[in-house]
Image (cartoon, rainbow, N blue to C red; front, top):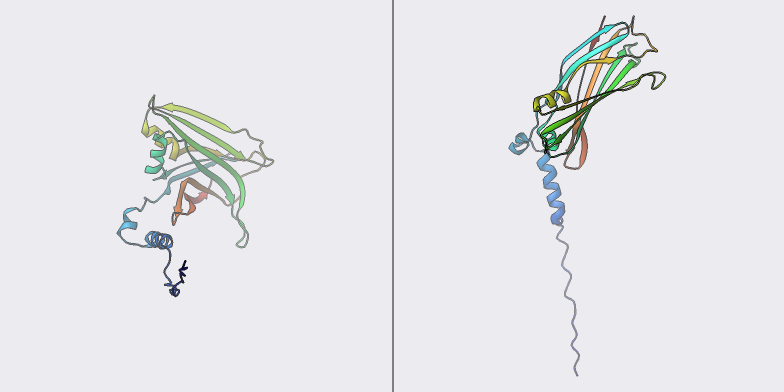
Length: 210
């Protein structure tokens, strides 16, 4: 019996081409960075703090503001699909110091607003918690509030409009200083290049006087 030998042909030189998966990833990254019509069409409204008002009386500040464009279409869809959505708002009273020294934080209130939707009843369950950061810690009990409503507009106001939020620290005085109020709201997150999470937030600051 004659045996048949098979020999391998000459190796082909590498073409230097990238795998298809890598090409798709690069194309997606370029599409995210490109300022063309696709990127312009997906641009979201700018989230900002408006209507910031603050008053000071007897070592206690009262702050009101709203987060314009804070309740996005994506957040609304999540709520109506039965997923709870929570926003976090931080209000601080700070005292300005010398040019080289950072501002001193005198009082801080953390506010969490949360909304859940029941498609069977068509009602929103709304929650709000105020936590006061004091020295020593936990000397002021948190404030909790709850509301049930079938009004979409009332739900929207609950999430992004905050009125007369108290900010104080019973162990510290807020008199005789160059005071300012700082507000920062975190209303979700987006993904940069479809991979890296980035917070969607807004902040504002203004002077505070009696």
